[in-house]
Length: 398
Image: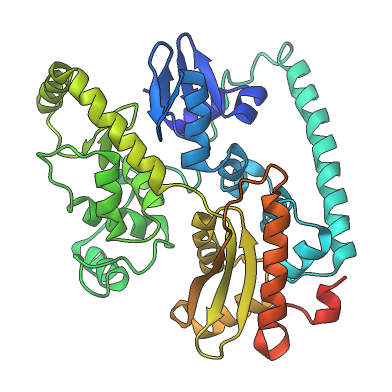
C-alpha cells in the first residue's frame, strides 16, 4: 500500500490541483491516500454522494483545500520561504495588499505588491523549468524513473536503529517534554528527530496492542497528549508504531500487532456486512461535524503586558498553525516573534474574538464580511504601539 507521500509524488500536476487521482474504479486523495470507490454511495449530513463528488467533500472537510495542504509541506519541497508561505496564505483568503500588510506587520502596501510580482516571476520560471525537464526525459537515460525525494510535512522517517538511545537519554527527554509525567500532556512537539522518536514510542504505550481503534478513537486518545494530534498521528504511522487500513477505518499497534490477529479481525469485519457499513457511515457523519469549518477573527495575546496580535481566517481550526510558526521562530510578525522569544510560550494565549455567522443571502461574500469584521476589531482594540504588535495606524492604513 502506498503512503500519502507516494500518491503526491506520482500524481500529475492536474491531479494535484484537483486533489485526487483515479485508479480504475477507485479515487485516491493525493493528500492522505483516502479512497472512494465507484458504485458505492457515501452519505454526508443527510446528502448522498457518488464516489468522485464525495472525494471532493472529503478534501474540503479533512484538509480544508488542496492549497492549504500543499502550503503546509516542508520548505525543501515547496521551495518557498516562510515569508512567501505567509503571503500566499493571506492572498488565498482574498485579502488586499493593505490588509496583508496590517496582518503580517511587514513593510508597507507597496512592499506587498512587490512580493506579488516576485511570486509571479517564480511562477513563470517554474513553467519554463517544467518544460525543460519534460523535454529532458527523452534524452537523459541516467535519470531516476520516479521522484524519490520524500514529500512530507516533517522530516524523513526515522527507524529504530537510526539512533543510539540509552535509558538515561530516554528518561531525560521524557522528563523534559512530559513535565506532569508520561501519562500527562506533551509540552510541545517541536523537537529534534531523536527526541521525537523517544516521545512517540512513549505515546504509543497508551494504545492497547490487543485492540483496534477507529480514527475518531485515535484522535480522542491523542488529543489528551497534545493539541496537534493530527501531526502526532501521522508520525506514529510513518514510524511504524501505528498501523491502519487503507481507508483509515481501523488503526492498531504496529510494533506488537500479530498478523494473524489482524487477519481474523478483517474476517470478522467482513461477516458483519451491512451493519459495519452503517456504523462507518454514522462515524463519517460525526467526523464531518467535528471538522466543519468556521471563519472568524482571533487574537494572540501576551498575558504579561496585554499586547495583542489580531488576524482573521476562513477556517478557525487552522489558527494553531500560528503557534507552530512561533515555536519554529518563523512567524511573519517580527514584533510578536521577538516577544514570544523573550517571554516564552506560556506567556501567550490564542483566543477567538468573533466567529462569522453564516448567511443564506445569495449575494453574501464571506471574505468581504470577514474583512469588515477584522477592521471592526482593529478599531475596537487598536493593537498598535504599546497595545499591540501591528504598525501604527497611519502605516496600517496604507
